[in-house]
Length: 436
Image (cartoon, rainbow, N blue to C red; front, side, top):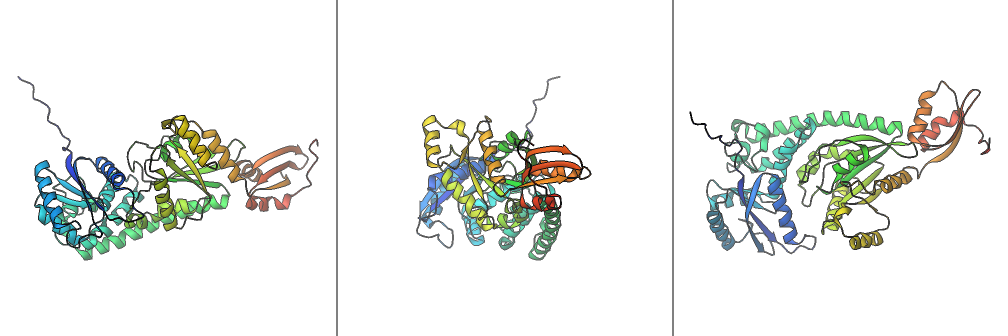
């Protein structure tokens, strides 16, 4: 009997056409850079870019965002290239999206950058909290667009492909404003309960006096790889946009003996949807509660300064703009020696590393340790032997200068945070001579 040829089970990748509009805004990235990033987003979401269309406008056209002549050009390109989905680099209004879909005809989908990012988040969220936050952002985005033309986003996913994971399995019967508002209210309650537990954990770390460091940066800057390199962890890290969404905290011992916590957070991006910032606020609170934010950038990217500014703007949005920051220039292995030296001279306070090659990590940890000890005070105390937990805190959260076992307890001189110094106050003793 002849053997049957195995049939492929994976769905074919969709064919996407990108549309960008240069509105001449001073704060805009160069259009070619923004479109290149959009292409990476499309690839991350599982489609192939088969064409690009751009236009220069003073302002968007109210009806279709692009001009009528460009709409005709778009329709011709869609037909010629056998396009499945058209992706705009700017956010479309519900009416613009509907008008464009009608102009292009079924079964072509039209989505915008915001919908694309939300779709990627929908496929990458792993934890319950992450999935709840993504669902909330998606529903808030879809709510004003419930006019029939978005059934491919909220239906039973019969069309599939990118831009189709909205609603996380909600059936078409549930797609009306009242039910979505009810669902949004429910999700907010669930997220608040999860956030409450997170705040309790964060408060416990705060009360313990442990120095908290958060890694923040543009998506794909290498934060997860850096966390793995510093803490010998195996957090998921991949060379793609938004590879990880959920915050991960690890404990790390510094050379001086002090222990700190290091938290990896969701990556940022230019034009980050407001709904995502709002929905992920509880997760991003890990950054707001940090003592130090290590701002990780991909120094090999020609746009890293613009990416850094995008991250700082988002930090301002979540109330973390005034946090102490340390600039970490990652992916130094991809730079030639001249460029590395130029960056060292231009940014003397930054630390240059390669998380992948695990170089420069010692200098990074030394700088973190220096910042962690900036507010420390030197205390000498005679700690009774039955106060073992207190001595454990001294070793983990401070820097022991010397310690001697004497009658009545452990005579210790240490540089510790002010809160821990307060705990040692009842046992304060005279500082012995160095040769004592």
